[in-house]
Length: 609
Ligand code: ASP
Image (cartoon, rainbow, N blue to C red; front, top):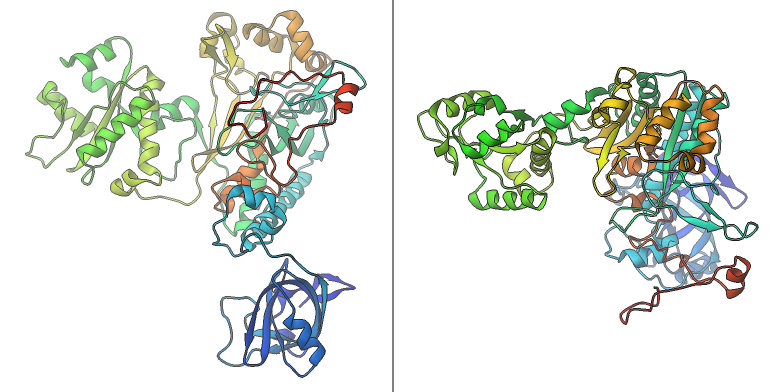
């Protein structure tokens, strides 16, 4: 098939040739993928972005034959020839072009290649540093190419769907002022304003809200966001968000917009129909039932509240927890294969998360006593009602957690995650997955949380989130208990998007900022631009941002977002390809009036401070 990639140097794309092209004269161009000599013929696979096709060179034309003989791996060549069917028995059903071969009439070397630092096949074991240093080679691998193609497709589908819904794609500045998303800013010195700095945006948040004040009504951007966070294995200093904001909306309108493009993405990129609208779970319910604000709901496993079973218990530890207003939560899993040493390991895991311990009870047949280090403290009635409440079957284990409501369930949330994770316990308890893709919105997050170190309230997600209208009086009376219009979109246990309905009235926004400890001057200095916009007739508005890198990684089954970013940074925030970050010339620093004051180099240091 001729290709949209046809140019003066080629008529067809390698990977698209099929038996239908038999007899066609083609001009191809690409990379020598692999070469084999067989019984007086040369064979090589020629590769371009679309895939591979086998080229056969016979000795009939001495010049072409000798050119083929000199080809090395990753040489770039132009091949003219005729498409023919491969002889019977030599077809390769694994290759889309496996029925055909191109019989070369001429071969032109367009460029040679040095010996490769690593094999380009999918399985070769190469360090990340080397892969990133030679990213141009790494990206030639089919998997990486397909990751970038998927990324492109997703972006196109999102753009098309958002356009169809009346969104305008508008760019916001990269050189800007700090926007608080809770991370450290990257700073850029402003040469023309000595001593002053731009910040790279942690998100386009303030500008997108200002665009709503400006009457744009629906904005989106595939926006780069920069967050200078401490090293974590899968963090990137810059990431891409599908960022959107809408005017005159309620929560469900924003959700519907996201659902529409997600549905189209799954259909067109994965061939999967995902049902919409996505389920919505109240934050409170989500924490109680799953012990997490981003539970993986492909599995049913649920935490249950057992407090009332133990309301009058003589067992001191449980009794005291209940009396002090706490809850007793339970999680029941199939425990036939779970040994005491597994339980010890789980106990340690929870202790590492701050739990005091992990009480448990293993159920047996109807007439048998359950096995448990604590069951002796329970009354027969308690055991009976417990058994009924958890619907226990022989061999199942109920694990307990006690404490303040969310804390108790959060420990079991850790256990739940273990039980459905990719680990030994998960294999033992053998839960069945109900579906492949599980989307849900978690809605009505608390507006504020207490920051014990700084002794002030802080935002749980975003300082511009609006409280529910009915919760407004609590700003004065009970700030820690305000339900907000903040929502997250969770896919298979991963927080994929986050957003909210915003404060569109300046006075409410000011009040919340004051609660978070911002003085009037600080509010002006940090948020003045937004506050002013809100005070000149900003419409009600809300939006969301969805992590594009994360989405592509999930779609492509990649563990790390580095696999779906063309030029990612290492976990240390460096780029082995460009060697960024790098020193600058003294003169550049002088122009910026910057003097370095570096800490002394550590003896084992690589030269970087
Ligand atoms: N600005 C938020 C973020 O980047 C998302 C949003 O609320 O729209 O996480």
